[in-house]
Image (cartoon, rainbow, N blue to C red):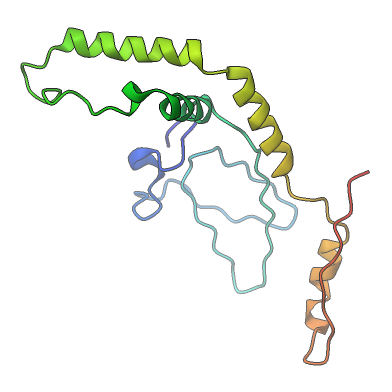
Length: 162
């Protein structure tokens, strides 16, 4: 497991080849299990119908923040969009010049991108993307067996938490 894994975080987040099983256990009604971000896992129901609730914590990472900041700088700064020097992969690459260019671009990032504007945008998206609070959803799930060809169904209005 990669600590504080990012989406697609190298070999550690590969669902298709997770490696050997490290632990197996059975959860019973009412049990709670904490899985840290980045832990590859699989849940299999027994021969009975099973429902599980997953709760995630919406979070933004400094990687997300820096990624957006670099994109903003790149939209206005031609040098950020320029190709790396042709010799960057050769042994005789001028590493000092390469490091200096990187340092200058990083410095411009800190000087020219409005971090507070990005923070405000993240805050707005965080609030806008939270799912609505819906009442009586579990009760509705228990009534699914009562739905038939003659049933009339429709959207349930979203009710606020307050």
